Length: 107
Image 1: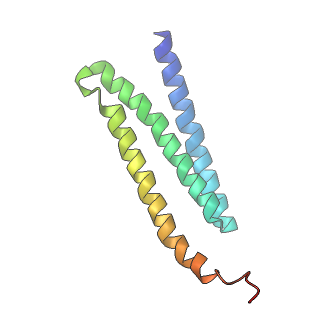
Image 2 (image 1 turned 180 degrees about the vertical axis):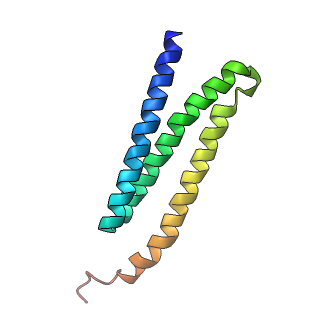
């Protein structure tokens, strides 16, 4: 019982703190026009979702042990979302880097 209370409190605290940080980082990133800060906000949002998903998976597993794979499936889904966001960042960033490639050359 004490392990369950610890798991729930850590999951809720992690989910809330990461979600609040995500909102603040995204707002600040838009004000400062910082893609890095917005990306960090997205990563914090994913951390918040993971915190809440652990809580939900544990509760579902408690009532239905046949769904033991839910936590792993959510983890794989979150990993694919992060991969897709990383590919999107690369697609958006690489052309800009190529445009400024000759900027520091002394030719």
